[in-house]
Image (cartoon, rainbow, N blue to C red; front, top):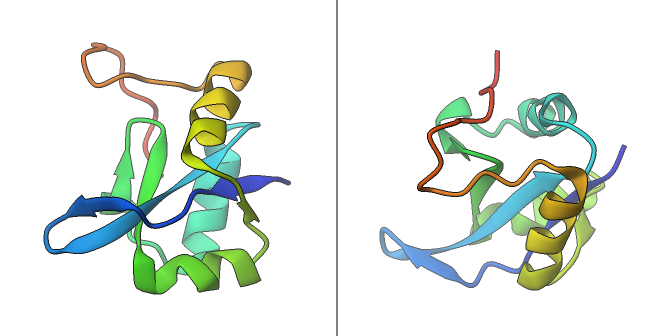
Length: 94
């Protein structure tokens, strides 16, 4: 199982955020996020938004640290990238 996280550099709602992704499947990503205690509402299309204060928790749980460009490359390479304007939504957590 490989899950990846980029540095918390994305601003929103007065915080900085990371993106948590899988390069294998959404199921793998949902299992990892659930084990980490990430709420389902944090899932957006193809990733989980994780606040900066949870970054170290994700890394300790096994997420591999990569830069933001690598996150996008991995999602595209796995065929899991879902853009905002796309009508198709990735299956959310069960």
